[in-house]
Image 1 (cartoon, rainbow, N blue to C red):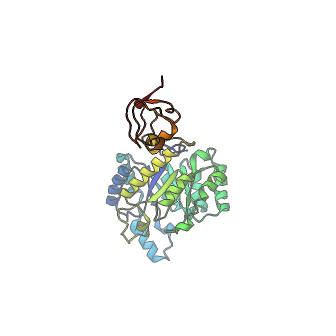
Image 2: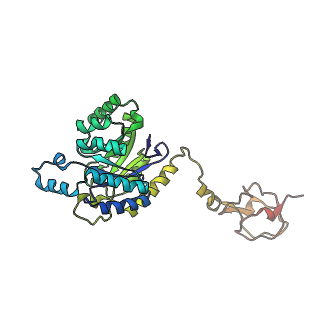
Image 3: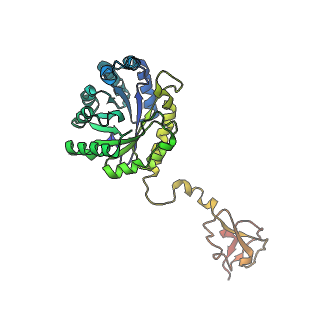
Length: 336
């Protein structure tokens, strides 16, 4: 599968999830996009919605909050322009079904939130579009996941190339003991789709463990300051500086996993002789002495010119040597 020009057979895609951490500020968003570009993330994701279709007005506090962080279509088009100048892909989760077509037309990639995984209006509108679909599976049962995948296969001839699932635990944050990371190889085998990991964890360990288990798409919440308390997601987000290190680690670890057999690594070649034992003299010996087993022992480093004790037995010393020093090729000659 290719995602934002990344070949996921070889590379990872790291998505910075801004969600609504921006608080509705386009200035904040513009500054953050530049910082995220520097961090090396693959793409940045937002959440788009119509407040009246996201939360009932009966929930007054929640509804008022959503209105305060709401981004309109003109706002998001402005964001797309800023992102284009920075050459960083931007896309969105349509948290209300009326936004699906807009995201499809302007982004080419649609993210389905865990809460909408079984919400047919959003799911079908996304699957029937021409966009790549990434769906989070937080709080979804195996039956619900199978239903989603079967729906995708029924409407998309190239489902494997255009649909991905993210393992996700829909708690904010969840306890580490409930990471359920074996779901990643399970989902990969049972669906035959590209699998990723959407992290709500305060720890980085599940991110790296999920890579080892087969995840190649990573969604990580981002903020400029985890101490902010006005929006819940700030506390479980990473800063751009922290994200830079995570991206670097994921890329390096992914590269290390491309080799499927045990082999000596280039970095090991620099120390391999230093950590292995070579032949040494175990006592003071004089020029002309014929070397026997009783004259020799072993200690670091290994000298590839003297590969074994047997290779020097019976040789005549060309100079005096000291106890517990390494044997060198120039120390001896064949006995004539």
